[in-house]
Image (cartoon, rainbow, N blue to C red; front, side, top):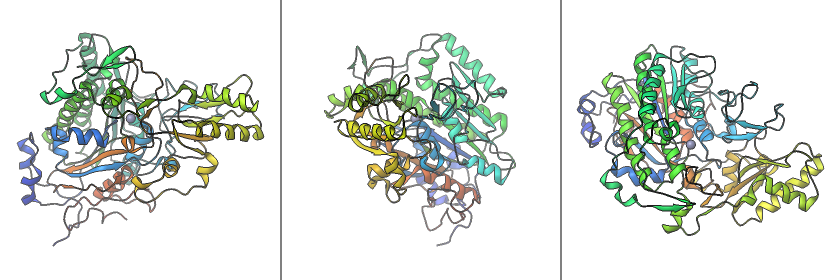
Length: 559
Ligand SMILES: [Zn+2]
């Protein structure tokens, strides 16, 4: 068999019919010749909270963009292998090829008790050295990301590369784009906004005009596909009911727009406009377009994963991704796609309990930092005076002991905190920073890692808590369900939150399915090899995945 010297120089005409079998594949795709040489545009799609479970559940239903991507290289068990399965850490792995333990993005929020401002909580994508920044209203920045992204590496190799990132979420944009972004847009209260000190591009101005018109008018409910019927069933949650929503939107409700398939549609519309305005994929060097679609996550948080709401979201997501790919086709761009997710997710416990998972529960408020601080004081007499003794961004994860106590008291408080949390029936494991610092970085198959390995992959000695608490399986860390607020979430160290699909696609490619576990840190080295990008040894924690289904090897270009 001949070997292919150039990645993806795949004249697989014989295989075209086989891989061109998506139900609604546009004729132009299957008739176009297979491209030669490195792609001109990398399209990196993140579907926020798109678990491997959701992908498996809806895969037979996909007929548009997601059906096309299923004709490429499909890795149904991609791992966000670390313990803190949140949006910022998850997005930080996708295009850097590094784990949070190395890139520094250990969580969405952490505490830095040394910062001079009164608020000690630090948001992953803020620059807290700017006095205007707060975790809730951040001055958006990638300053906390310790490594470069693929787009930055491409720009370093050839400054003509454009690095563009869009999402509803600022943290997704910054973690996929990194420090040197040519265009960066996210959604804030009804409009797309950009980095401080930058003007909106005409594409964003036009998109915001469309958004404003939509918000003024409102929008009717979505029609549900017939195959959503089984999920169309109400479940009681707190004082209300969920499970039958169809996203009818009253006028002037930017949050209703955000928590609906319309958010992804607007994000892709903006991406398409930027493709046109910047002529992405048609410049002097390969470009990167990162598109993080947040609506799956917002819908999952607001309504859980197994109701009519998510079923409609999945159907619309498929169409929306199809529109993005069709737009690139229409412009004749030679692009390669990767699609993955920042983390998985879990349905709300109220529906889980009705559907054969009786152990599903909500976390106990006694795991909140205020309650644990009081319990430590009661046990040891140690107090931080005016301020809190324990800091934490919720009822699990990183816990920090106040700096206002003596080192001896801090050690005693850590001991008490460990004893209190280890003894709690909802807790699976507790580690001290001291434990984790001594633990080697995990290697090998991520599905076999211990809980300590998973916590180690999320550990940064300067940013992590003094104590790290991992909740047990199916404990939802939202103590009270209030409809209209978040009712379901992710963030655990278990595989329902760690496993995500990883799909690679390029026109003319011969598809294959590889069910063995891979990691999201493998995406960047895989794309770097496709591009023929030379990077220093040791740049990535992940490995290159050979996307040639035959004897060729798309990784041979990676040094
Ligand atoms: Zn997320």
